[in-house]
Image (cartoon, rainbow, N blue to C red; front, side, top):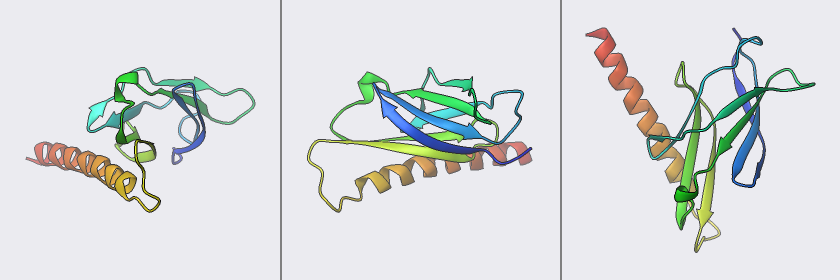
Length: 124
């Protein structure tokens, strides 16, 4: 099985879109999208016409669109590997603001913590 690669194509009408390549060409891979360690529902992975891969749609829940930095992490549900992320910034944003980077680091740290805990339980 080859490595999965997720490339953003656009964010349109509240839906993040991307192209996923790699993996089993006959079965769509399971993806997981989280925001502050909470799983986002409604992810669609569809066969892409004319492209060797899958089209991914991630709806951005309206209740998560608010002032501040909102970071969404997209990962392989089977392996937990981070494939991509996107960040929404609203309100007063400084030119050299690192809040988006901190939000992404928090999401990745939460993912690592849950993987480590799962590993500890499995190896006991």
